[in-house]
Amino acid sequence: MPKVSIIIPFYNCPYVSEAIASALNQTYQEREIIVVNDGSTRFTEKIQPYLEQIRYIEKSNGGTASALNAGIRLSEGEYIAWLSSDDYFLPDKLEKQLEWMIKNELKICFSSFYQMNEKSEIIGEPVTLYFQNNEQMERTLKRRNIFNGSTAITHKEIFQEIGYFDESLLYTHDYDFWLRVAQITSIGYLDVPTVLYRIHEGMGSKKYKPDIRKELQYIRNNSR
Image (tube, rainbow, N blue to C red):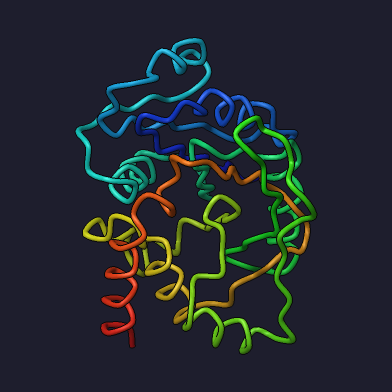
């Protein structure tokens, strides 16, 4: 079976130990876990118990895109899975999603997910998407970011073909990347929850709304 590299960018996140534990607890064993410390000054002690089970990289602070790129460049897997340090993989995420991707000959795939709170309690029903066809999905994607990055599994060939995450985009590098991916290949969507996505006051989408709006406008102005 192909190896999957799980990249966990980390910057001052109190939930990182839960993210690492969820990556280690995968039913799919052909995987490596790469934690990229993006210049953190807090909560690094939470990584210490896992150092013998993960690959650990330290770098100066450059943003999530730079941390992802650093992990991807050092990865050995045929597939890349991104896990935000405040999120959580369900145990069969890799096994279930990768099997579906290979069966449908997909190079990238997203899934539905649950939301959870600061206490790791699930909030409500799964967050899911529905599209009649791939064309409708792509039209919707051009208007807004519809995908959760922690649900993504991407074949490494994608990065070799279109490049890495744009490090000049501190908050919307994922959306920019999905738009570029949509230009070269079909995007798969598995309507099965594979991730717990944490809603909390410290999350970037709440803290940096004005900057996010500026970056989104830049992407829309420059997308083909």
